[in-house]
Length: 276
Image 1 (tube, rainbow, N blue to C red):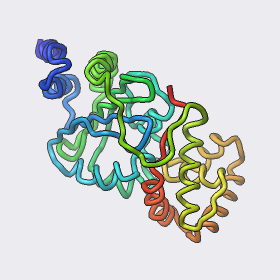
Image 2 (cartoon, helix red, strand yellow):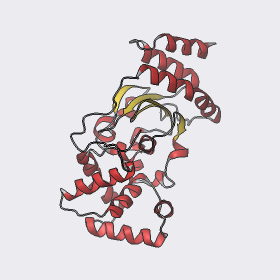
Image 3 (cartoon, rainbow, N blue to C red):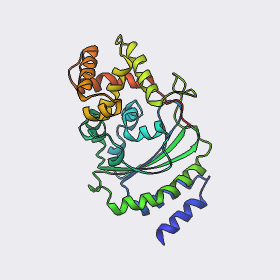
Image 4 (cartoon, rainbow, N blue to C red):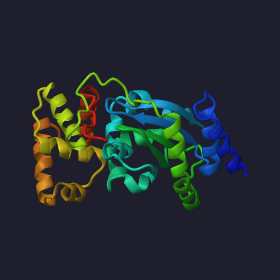
């Protein structure tokens, strides 16, 4: 009854100031997350933070300077926004690239949040807008979500999407990018690469489209094999692309690539295109 009553309270609070507190109470009955953050991704710029709550503030210590400053472009869940993913529940372990846990993004940003597990309830309140309710388990509990928690989130996903789509129906999402427009056509992943090329050029580094694509995939946590499968080339060819990329950037490691590219991502304020 507690979960039903919490859900009913969320429905009654739709469109009112009490909706977020009611929503948070309901989500606690669904999977008891240690942290919850609501993000609205739009056609331009970093996402808008709708709300956040955590048992320990360390989870959000680098939210503004790190994540919103450009690291969000490397996050596995951001890829769902670029892809126009359907509403529902998504778990980090299912959407992350194969080498995500060994990536510099994970080491430099994600590990610092102390997050152990993450489930996103995704909604699409408007064209080109994605609202994500991110439920996390972190050092506060020291426990990832159980299989029962995941099943509960899958069941709650469609309800959470309906609530979010109704409550935030007029939201634009994101911020003023001050840069390129999202546009009406083209490939979203390609636009991210194009933005990186433009930002690199401003620093005197000339990157080809393929080099930019490889750089982004490395930073997101794709292995050589995964990159090869995605690009339709051999693993040996990917190694050649990597050597060319490192030579062009005058670097020798993924750590240096991350340090070099993250400010470029932030400066480029790269945005998705062709999203409907």
